[in-house]
Length: 243
Picture (spheres, rainbow, N blue to C red):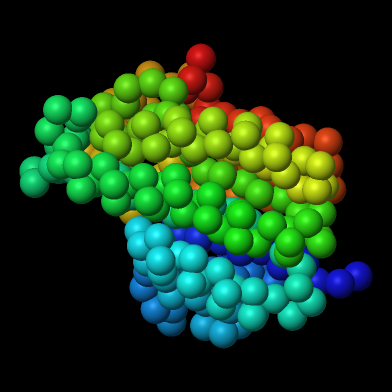
């Protein structure tokens, strides 16, 4: 069988890092996007060759990156696009930024990365996704559906918008044979957990943090034949935190 190709944004840590390792282990070729150059600490084969350095906060830079991505698709097919990159700025003392205090420039930066970049990439790679009858997975958040003690207002509303975008894209891309879904992680154990997360975990029905690998498994399912009739949905991956 031909080797499948994934394009993943935000691959350098946490959920993104686990997703690269999952797809690589399943035999996929993985193209990664981030604003940093490829890190030698990322342990997957062909990583540097398959990396695109792009600032997803720059509309022009993101549009330009689409052409570079296309040049790396050897057969002109893209089997999966996972829009995982996201930012959640904090205040000077690490506090949550609300609707009153958040600088308008921060709102713009957050929405460019968390919301507009997925639109630009999916539209720009429409032909390649269609050729593969591929899958798009948008990584939203539990913060998109409720006020979160750590996630700021700009982050939360950008993720709510991304959930709505997922439905719109599923409607528009469906006739091309491309499925579009989202996953909404809750509290996941990564290197950037906010102080006080342990208090949230105490109230979770499953009473533990999620692991990046558990989220990566759901992303892989949504890009695999096992989910061939699943589109336009948002899967909660949060240990029942949303109930």
